[in-house]
Length: 287
Ligand code: SF4
Image: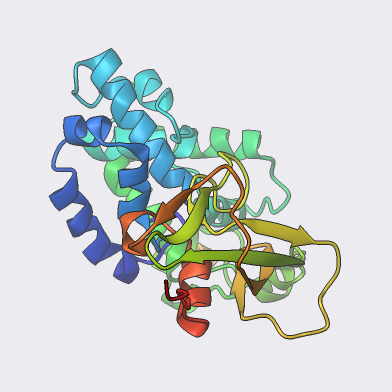
């Protein structure tokens, strides 16, 4: 949950999650729709799909017990080398480095190797943790240093407890960091077709398994080739997309795929669609 989401947002959701899915078996047995519903509003829904798939793999391959071998942890869906390193060091005391964005930055500065490749950084991280004798504490310290004093745009070297060992301490870090290229945000224009029925509710379709809002439920959406000449009902921001949503109430029959939903809270809808409904409440025609 903490990948890309702040601690204060995660904390209450983390507790709710364990009320819904108190064990790996409960999670593995839940439907994907229920898991996505529990994740609603946290964004980056791939994480929910991965957790669900990982729980199922743990039940099938490891009898419901979280694996303790590094390669088995790494084989779980959604767990890469760095996350596997965190789990193995925190939970099982292994000498396995974490190499997230924060740790990479600290290592590059520490060694004054600002152009180091990932392969070189893994090698530096492994060498450091091998001599640390306390892998869990080492990994957490590196992550914390990168998240607090040694941030991308500023380095507070005067407060840093390890500045005397760092080859970039008190150098001109801000200018180097600010030259990093920004990934552009793309605008997309989506027409949201609202089919409503006095008895049946609202017609929703499940989004494809890949792409934006994968697996979530929305009214039928049509991507427009150009920006309409009227204002959208809502603009929803994703990391690299700005989705302009235009609501389009229709009295025609809905498309064949999808279902009528009386209570929108029954299914997992993207936050952008919830906002659209809040700003433009659905008007159900009277029978
Ligand atoms: S001395 Fe400065 S650049 Fe080096 S690790 Fe500490 S905060 Fe980062």
